[in-house]
Image (tube, rainbow, N blue to C red; front, side, top):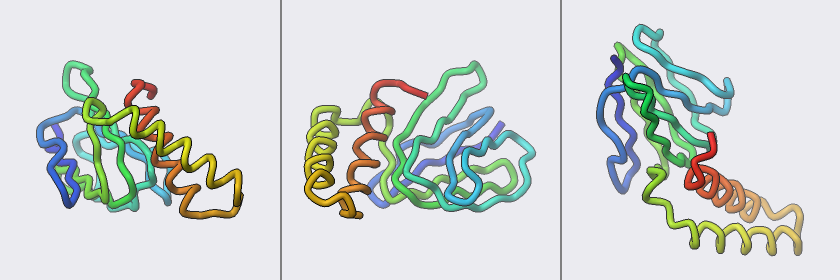
Amino acid sequence: MLNVQVVSPESVSYTGEASMVIARTVEDGDIAFQPGHVQFIGTLAVWSVDVIKEGGERDTFAVHRGFVQVANDDVTILSDVSEPKDAIDVARAQIALDTADAALAADADDAAAAADKARAELRLRVAAGAE
């Protein structure tokens, strides 16, 4: 089993055991960690992290950048923001998406609006249970 922690500066979103953790890194894309995985460190993309427990139950988190570190069956997700699926405010995420879309319509090169849109879309995808 893996010992897993999903943490951000504001909170600890998850601590427990899992049979697999799936994350998306900037360098390597999607990557899965299982017991016995070699040591690893990577930069997280704005994407979801799935913690899959022994019976197949899945906990999904919206993760906004940060790092993943794996060593000795310990997986640590250190993220700027990590939100469990059930803690996402869908109405707020939809407003953020609409605001980002409007900003991008006015200026397609607005990098801040593009980043806001990516985070809002992630929150909505995770809240809807899309994998």
